[in-house]
Image 1 (tube, rainbow, N blue to C red):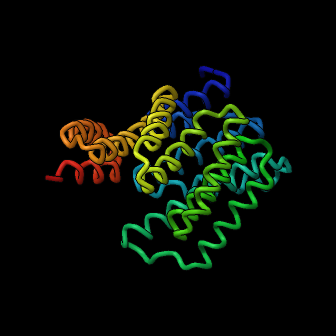
Image 2: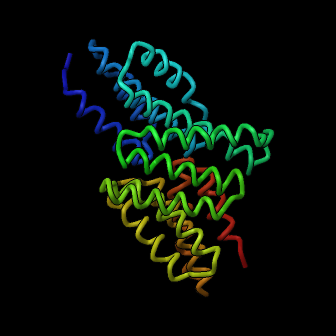
Amino acid sequence: MAETALSHVLTASSLLTRAGQWEAAAELLRATHVTDPDEDLRLKLALAEVTVDQDFAQRTDYSGSALTDLSAALAAQSDPVPQWDAAMLALRKRYSTHLFATFDGDSPAPDSSAVAQLAAEAERLQVEAADDSRRSAAAFYRGLIDDNLRGQHADAFKHYTGSLALSESANDDLQASYAFRDLGDHAHTAGDLTLARTYWERSTEIRQREGHLLGALAQQVLLATLTRDEGNPTAAKAIAAETNRWARQLNLHYVVAQTAELLQES
């Protein structure tokens, strides 16, 4: 049986996930066998990360068993960092479930108490985070909850701004790209197209450099929308058409839907 360092497997899994190859990442992790309990926990964390990410990107529901296995592995653990990471993954899954219910109408929208609990959990995670990168992630999700589930846009803006500062303190460019994306959305809503382009192009550049295909394609949707609003519908449709082609190959349903809508505009 071939052997390789677990760190190499986890790096490969992360890169596959960023490239939208979730099944390959999950298969790699499931095919990796370890005997050390700490390494087993790292494997389970990585698999939960892959499946939570896929559930959001493709609107699947694969993460349940991975999160359950992770919770069981954590029962014998006292290290707060993996406990925090697992709680953050659970929050991300709950957020995406609430988000889809809110906007799709396929299932009952979350009640205000469930959303309030989610916001409180994001606040707890920000307070208890071990470093600025993790604090930035928690602050960002706190902003998403306010923006998309509560309609509290001014509060969301503050959380995004805080998330950006924390990610820059941590030199975490990929995390910063999320804040740039949503700060750009606020600029766009306010009618500041120049600032929106600055933020959205910065987010896109980071995601392209980091090999984050879903993230880069999601940014292309925004740039197509912005190009249309700047008065160039022909260029906007060209961007949307190519993005739609990419997204269909990866089953990124919401990117496909958004670009199709742009292409149908007269």
